[in-house]
Image (cartoon, rainbow, N blue to C red):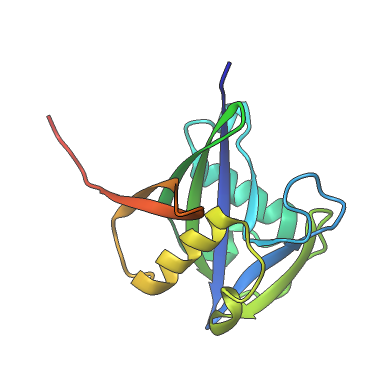
Length: 166
């Protein structure tokens, strides 16, 4: 039986630096890999990934809603992982605050944009960041991605989501 897992990932930018987390080596999921701030949606948040983002950012970095500007959903990524369908809502935003608190999840670092893709990321994160950094943060549309494999290598198939009215 396949279960559904809903998660959010948040990347905050300060000037030309992105807030990345190097996951602790003792974490069950992606130990030692770099990511944004990420977490599972709670049952009461299932229809509001934006709220989950704000909660996770505050819990894992100490950055509060008032410190975040232009936080918006940019990507919805769907992938199958064993007996789960994972839906990841990627949000990007900006902050002027650079001070962050410690997190049990890993260590937070402000990484220059030119260095972001040089970190060790799981494929979904790397492919999404590659697309985002290539297309820029000015895109207004939400992109839908599915992870596929070609010649033994993962790649993302992208589809732009447009508003549709009946």
